[in-house]
Image 1 (tube, rainbow, N blue to C red):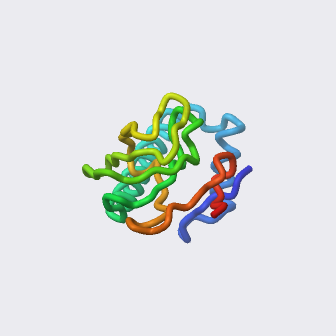
Image 2: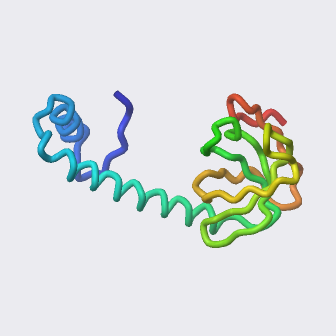
Image 3: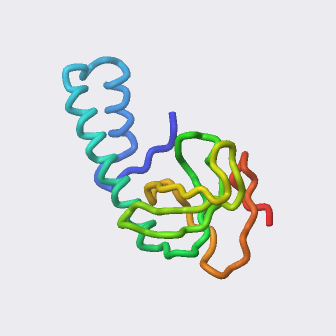
Amino acid sequence: MTMIEHSSKISPQQVGDVLAAIINGEIDGMLPALASAINDRSQIVRNNTSRQVAISLKAGDQVQIIKCSPKYLIGATATVSKIEGTKIHIFLYHSNRKFSRNHAITCDASMLRATGRAGEEIPTYDQSTGLRVS
């Protein structure tokens, strides 16, 4: 089981008890309501993350793709060209399969991690680990 972040109002034991009840089928009748609540909350968290990332970026900033489909773009580095709300337009630094260096990609801000400000030296990241190598 993975580590779960929790509020001070709910103990790890209580979270564990709920998870055990789900796994053991003790609350099967409540699964649709639980799934809906989890999906709704996940969407709120994604939206908040997108807004926070979008607010922190400006055109010319350097970013790394941290989640997307197709998966082979994860780890790719790019430059922000335009920001429209939480939609970020980027240009890849390097060609990546069907995406050429000059190919514009539009993605949600939550899919990106800022790696540098406009005018800074472009860092290099290992495509498989996402770690900075220069």
